[in-house]
Length: 393
Ligand code: PMP
Image 1 (tube, protein in one colour):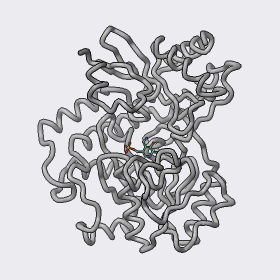
Image 2 (cartoon, protein in one colour; image 1 turned 30 degrees about the horizontal axis):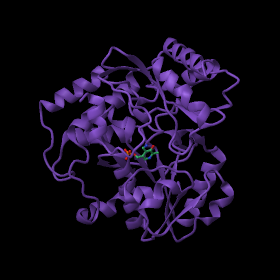
Image 3 (spheres, protein in one colour; image 1 turned 135 degrees about the vertical axis):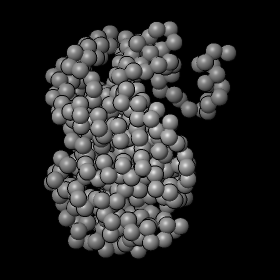
Image 4 (cartoon, protein in one colour; image 1 turned 45 degrees about the vertical axis):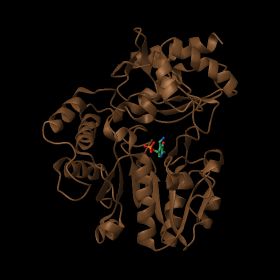
């Protein structure tokens, strides 16, 4: 049995795997197959490899930490310097108010923690989120997710959750004094890169203040430089009450966090056993990788070039079959007439050495979210291959 057959026999065969390619090695923006295939990774493992695959500084940080210790104890029981150093580095990137970091394993777990925290702090039960939002795959995260197809099979989900249309200021009066929190993606990712307006986010912040509702921003896909600022909410001139992050945070290692002011987080601290218990949350090796990732983003000035690189993609991806490009920095969606038009283009692009895909809730658009380390020449080359794939279809 070859690796591909083994993979299929071991994994749920009911799933349609969109990109069944085998990868043997990855480095920087490139991934390599077993027969010498070389691909440009244009999706960064869905917004994870913002500093590229196996960045040497991430590898060194991991190795240094491995030489000290891996797991010691359930999160929060011992003082572990990788965790405290990471918390400090994270809060240094954030407005002063957001000064308490709770480390977890993943995006979904960060969402769960944030929802629990909001309920505990406000004593309220209702949670709002947005239509077509994606917040993760665990029960709580699915409940705030805004796409019925993904939720149907798992009902009953969490009670007390309602969904508003994203970027619709007119609906914000549905946030009331009963609402514990509203969770919103700063830029909706799996909906196909839907970018909210400043007017909307300002009105959202204002309404939350009026009603005492916590504003939770999901920066899991948009954070860590992807949109051209460290945090996407920094484009909107607002400060959330809770931020959730993961994905790009670990430079390829699994880690997440929810971050809130001390005044809010203290409801967990005052009785940790009623808070959020996580064995591997803030794993020291992942923390070391995350610390290195923050250093790399800063030292290599990767975020400063995001907007220019995005514009380069937009300049080159000029074709009559491309109907629209939606983006916030290097979080991009290239729209075609339909999935039936896009799918063969993606298949051909993969054959020609470009890894891309589409979105969970938006199948007519190609995802472009490369490592922020991609060079101008590599962008030109990637765009030429995409255009060739379009022309050949
Ligand atoms: N929120 C957003 C905006 C995401 O894009 C994702 C992952 N695609 C998640 C939450 C869930 O993260 P994870 O897969 O790490 O649980």
